[in-house]
Length: 137
Image (tube, rainbow, N blue to C red; front, top):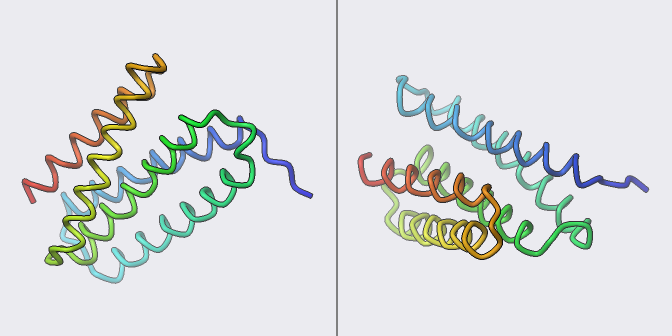
């Protein structure tokens, strides 16, 4: 059986976090092709699903707030990319995206203020940036 270490999960989450922003930048800056956007979304979705499965299998190794923060981050990123890249005119998906971005902001605030973990500041800033991109797009 494959044992997943906490360090591996931390690095994988950081990879997903850093993998997300170039996708947003690509669509925001360049003239994007739909095939490339679908490919990037499916690649991020696959990597995220693998991560969620791994984190749920090793839930006893990680604190509850970390699991909640990471899952809300990944779900907010997936919904943002789906709404931003693929279905930009879908209002229901826009509402879900905004709900998950606010949940992401709330969990980040809890992580920062209640548990005094600085990773929550990154979550607060990134959720605010994604909300800004949503309304400016």
